[in-house]
Image (cartoon, rainbow, N blue to C red; front, side, top):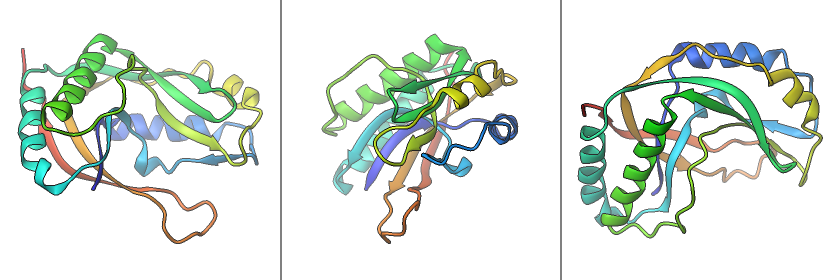
Length: 186
């Protein structure tokens, strides 16, 4: 199963972002992500063997229990080269980074082979270039001042990612929350 730990934006945050994205100029070179898949990846685990799932769930539950709820809001935008457009976050960034570190450590301790650790950059991917690169400037300009309303992050989610298999151009990955734990730390 292909998995990652994530924070999902609130319904209101998704609605605000949807409205902001509607105001972005059309960009034919971009493939926009489906709003049902909007999330902040905390720790990407890739393929996880079924026998590791019980320990992974135990350790992620422990990470959530050690983390207090925190405020977050969608804020500003950025890009990775000419390949991807994203929305950032503001508010409890230190708490979000700590939760990402805890999710990464939980996966490693459960025996999941993780990529090399790198500093966490909170982002929610909005679009990817269709053919290697795109002019993102009009989109960046349109979203530069975006400020979402804060919401309380109170859940750590384990999400399954199913990659497209049909070969249909533009097909999106499908995401399914397979488990979730409340943040209950102090």
